[in-house]
Length: 170
Image (tube, helix red, strand yellow):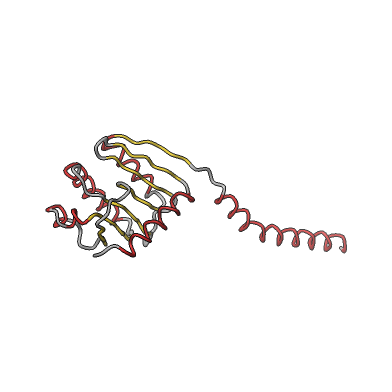
């Protein structure tokens, strides 16, 4: 009996050590998760990239985006109108930064009123979305997007976005 009691105590002790280690190992694993980049082309490709980006979305997650309004708006506007419905179904919080020219355009009148957007009078780095551990850069002229999965890169762009958000006007 003493032998069994001693073995049971050893197992309990080992189980406690393992239970304490699991959160640490999970943290290390997520920190070391591989980064990746994928290229998407055409309307369907861009939609697929957004579906991948929002795959793990939870209600209340923040989507940050830069929208440097330009000549491509004729193509981008219908795409984003469809995408906005998908984003709303995910119950995301949106924060966008555009240039003042977009606010003055006819397209801004149809911009969803519940989407939060601010404006700057200086050039933006490009059409970019930052969400969770992903950065999506879109060229509407080439109908091409690059989806980067990297916690480090998305954190960098999130901080940059938040600093621009603070100085942007409504």
